[in-house]
Amino acid sequence: QQHDDIKAFVKGTVADSAPIIPISAQLRYNIDVVAEYITQSIPVPVRDFTGQPRMIVIRSFDVNKPGQEAEELRGGVAGGSILRGVLKVGQEIEIRPGIISRASGGVRCVPLFSRVLSLFAEGNDLQYAVPGGLIGVGTLIDPTLTRADRLVGQVLGSVGALPEIFTEIEVSYYLLRRLLGVKTADGEKQGKVQKLAKGEILMLNIGSTSTGGRIQAVRADLAKILLTAPVCTSEKEKIALSRRIDKHWRLIGWGEINRGVTLEPTKA
Image (cartoon, rainbow, N blue to C red; front, side, top):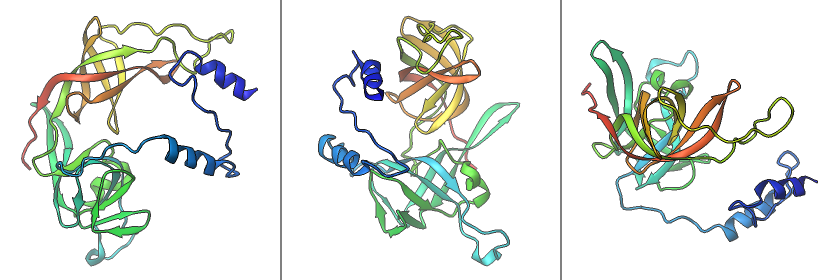
C-alpha cells in the first residue's frame, strides 16, 4: 500500500523511476541496502581541493563545562561542511557576516577573525580537512559567541577570500506547481501555489541560514527581496523560498541569486 502511494505521488516527476527501498531506522532494517545503493549508484561529486577554503557553519557550541578554571577555558567550536579548499590546523580564518548590530546609521557587520586550533571528524583529530562530511573546527573565538548554535548560517574561510555580505538580492525564481503536504478542510490536496506579491514576507534558506525577506518588486520570474538580516553568500547561489500557510512555513519554490546590494564589513 505505501509502495503504491509513493509511486502515485512521484508519478510524472524526475523521481518516477527511482528505486523505493523499505527501511526502519529504529530497528536498523535495510540501512545497509540504502548505504550500498548510495555508494554504487550515486557518483561522488567532483571536489575542489585547490581553491581558497570555504565552509558553511551548521552548528556551533561551547565545549567548556560550568565552573571551568579560567586557565583551562577553550575557544568556541564551529561545525559544518567544507565546500571547497583544504582547512589546516594553525591557519588564520575569517567568519562572515560575524557580529551583526543595528544602529541609527543602519546595519553593521563586524567579521570574526581567529585561528584554527584543532580539527576533528567522527571523534578523530585531524591536521587538515577536505570537502565532504562534517568537520568540527576548534578556534580561539570567545565561547559566548559560539554557544547554542549562535554561528549557524555564517561562512568560515581564509581571511579576505570570503564572499560579499548581501542586504538585498535579486533572484530568478521558480514556483512549485502545487503545495506539498498541505490539506484543506475537506481533506482535498491544496491547489496551485499563488504568485509572489509585492510587500509579501517570505522565508529564505541561503546556504545554512534562514532569514526573512520582504519582496520589493516582482517582474515575470524575477524578484527583488530585502533581507531582514545580512547574509554572506555569492551570486549564482541557489536558495529556497517558503511562505507562511496555516501558521507553518511551506516550501513554495526555489531560485538563484543574480545580483544584489552588498554591505561593506566594519573593521573591529
